[in-house]
Length: 538
Image 1: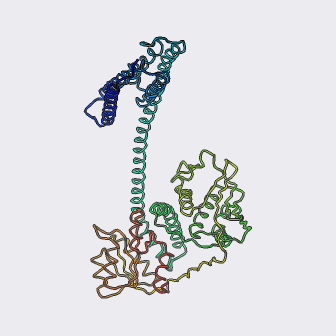
Image 2: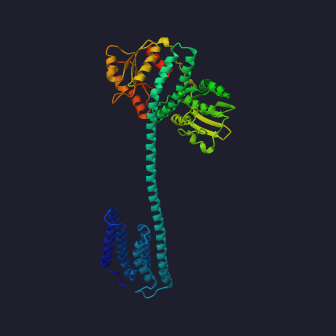
Image 3: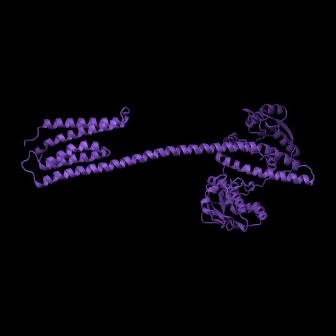
């Protein structure tokens, strides 16, 4: 055979290139062809592959003009294109079949029958058969690839649907959590208002000279209100931690001193229940922590241990290693089953209290512990089993003992020490009256106001030594506005917010304003401390 004319090769090359470019551009635009249905898009892909396959197969007409080496090279080239099409078609067999059929069938015929060739060897005939076998293998591979892609697509679709469901569930949970927070804050506020009035009046009665029977009644009243207040304070602690308004004051704290103070605080509770309290401290190390928050963690753990231990003892132990101190609170109480051990850290979850006995609290102690250890970056571990007691283990980093500072004791004030003018701002008359009565029992004189407007009138001439303002007042009025108005008339006048509102955003608002926030019911000792600060500024 004579060599194939160059113009023939050139025409085929131009046509093949044009087909390939057209196919590429069309396939690239297909995903954006929203007017076409998926079935119409697949048909277009099949047509493009058929045209491309026929264009490449036309080149087989030059097979008789090639040498044996050229035929082998050209065959490998076409087989490579067919193999690559398996992937580019994503294993979609109709699209693959229309492309490889004219190419592989043509190659097989050219090798096995050798049209236009004088002689065909046995090897060439075997190659022709193997080419058909290879085409079958490609179709099999395409089927498996397409199956894998379809399964992957199904999995991805299910994952997307699951992600949507999870997102909705998460949003629902977050909405429920926010609703719960709002409800607890509202309920806490509404309960704290009358409780605050009762607390103020009970404290005022306790300061008066009354007979022993009346003292017993007042003492019982104060105990009940204090118990109720303690339970509400648990809700307040949760709100403060969720609002992120609790600042961590890290210092070097001598652990044995802190444990000694803590043991002295809870010794009476353990003795009243007839159980022992053991303190074991085998180290003089200091730890890097917030002493007040760590004490709160220990208090919750120890009170829990006392509550659920009927006999035996409770042990509080501190041991040091090379880089940390291990604190252990161990009891011989009821113990906690394995399936309950994570649940006890949830809010309001209690074991063995179906009747919701108020003496057992609200079930917030360990929930607060979990939040506090996260805040301090402390590792906590629990080991427990039914009837074998419980063990809580804390690990704290060791600090340089040279940096340790001793706590400064707070001086207690007596009622006779106060001779101050206090402005009480509250929109509820009963609350104002009860606080005024208590302050008068403490030796103070009082000015009363229901809001900012009355507060301005009250301080027009007299400078108050202290302003005690409710946070939420009527309408758009607030304690912050009232305090700002008073301090505008008398710059530097000391002021404290007193609120029954425990909503996280309210706590943050007070923190941003830089004004101390106390919560109702206001304990007598706390009120005395605020009055003492006016007499002896820090």
